Structures are given as C-alpha cells and as structure tokens.
Image (cartoon, rainbow, N blue to C red; front, side, top):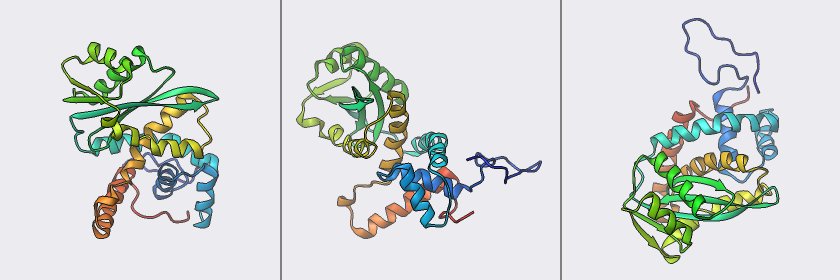
Length: 248
C-alpha cells in the first residue's frame, strides 16, 4: 500500500521502496511467506498481526504482484549456470474449471529453467515451449529428456534436431517430481482463476520457493543450517532488507 510517510531529498538515491509506508523488511518478509509456504494472503496478514504489524491482505497481494517478479529476476541472475541435461514434462492444471497444461523444464540438478501455461499439449504447444526455453536460456542443451508424448518428438525434430533426445517415462522423474510443490499450492489456492494469473504466480513461485528448499536429506544438520543462512543472506541482498521485520 502506498503511503505519504516517506519523502526523499535531493542527492539521496531513490529506492523501489521509497513511496511505500512500510520498510523493505516487512514487504520482503510478506512476499517470502506467501511464496515459501502454502499460505493465503489472509493467513499472511494474520501472521504479521501476531508480530505486531497491521497490514491488510489486499496490500500483501499488491506487494506480491509488484515485488515478486523483481525478486525472482534478481534470483535468476544470481543462480549458477544451468546444466546441459534438460528434463521436460507437462501436467494438467484446472483454471476456472477448465483443463490447461503446465509445461516445465528443469536441469539435472532440479533447477527450474522455465514454465509455460498452455491450452493444449500438441506439437504446436511443444514447439512453442521449446522456442521459449531456448530464447530464455540463450543456449542449447546436450540432452533433452521427455516422456513418450509424440508432441515432443515432432517439435524436437523441428526446433533442435542436433540435440540428443531421450524419451522414457522412467528417466524423467526429475521433471515429474518438480510438479509436486505446484500441486500442493494449487490445492491450497483451490485452483487458479486465470491462465495469466497462473503463469505470473508460478514464474515467481518456481524461483523463490526452491531457493529455500535445499536437498536436506543429503546433508547433516550443521551443513543444512549453514546453507540456509547463506540462502537467507542472498535473499536479503536481493530484496534490500537488512533484518527481520519490525513494526513500523
């Protein structure tokens, strides 16, 4: 929610939080809560009230819409170069009572490369997703792994024929498992209202949420806590927040 409590003088650099009543710590914390945990805007409002911060769920919705994409872009710029083995998969989602398809690509380490919500899963849809993925990554992979959907093979022969294409349901568990957090969130939100809203939310969610989900089963507790401290430090650098939120 914009407020008139912040003014800036000549010579001081204007920040993206300048015209907002609340400081960066509170805004970033609300965006983090909404995209990290399966919470509604009203539940985030309640959690902030427990900390002594009075903010409406409508304001939290505006913050997520305005700052969420900025945080996601900054996070993507900081992540390491993706692997050269890409796993692609599609899953149906319900939007406004209609069946749509969420296309997703991840690398061999489970990092989400791109997503795209489409009406179909035919050759045209697969070709569109391939081209969007190549444009965003600015590179071609060494191997592409998909299931046995024929649309993948037809689109692959047109868009990236030199790339090795492996089609096997058993080899594509990496992409299929990456759908689980989306399924959980879809259930919490009782479905998405529009294709555009789903695309915008999932583009942010697929970047912010995995940042705070290291593979805990592969590391002892001390290493996990060290890794999480590092990730929170990166988050503070991305958002410009210097600490935990405090009441304004």
